[in-house]
Image (cartoon, rainbow, N blue to C red; front, side, top):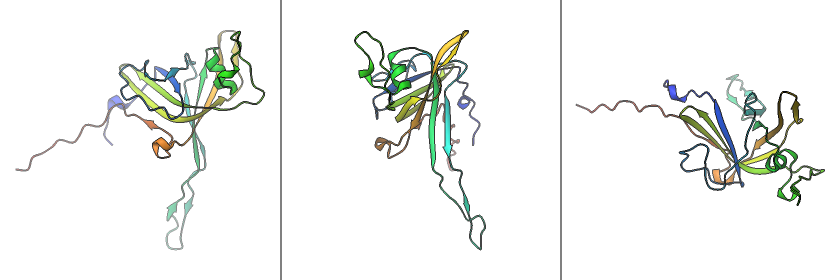
Length: 194
């Protein structure tokens, strides 16, 4: 693999957007703060608890034959997810954390918390920003729901931990997402035959 300096990312900033399930990824993300279309920002998230992408599932198991003890590795069942901490006490945060749709918003703008949460399925776009480089991470179907206790501290923001489990999408042939490359390797020099 080639050494690509611009592909080493320090996520000093970033943005998280949601949209209806299977919303197309932005064709041109010239401004990472404005993906356009139906994408809605979830707002501020914790600086000292950046989004964490997780993997849960089995490890490959090695199967052997009498002639070859390490003939083949099995395909493990793996689930991928992302966890982030919203710090905005808004209806959108409550919908994702408590598992409720827009009907939970009352006439007086209060939010009615359901007794039984329903995960909210959305398209998710996470944009990592490193100076002038940015890395869009797109997932067309994500099941979102609160994942832990609401965090409170006398010297920090109230935080709402939300976990998104990536689901397969028929729009991507069953795949769970598409991650962009910051910089592609330079093509090898072309030498004309003499």
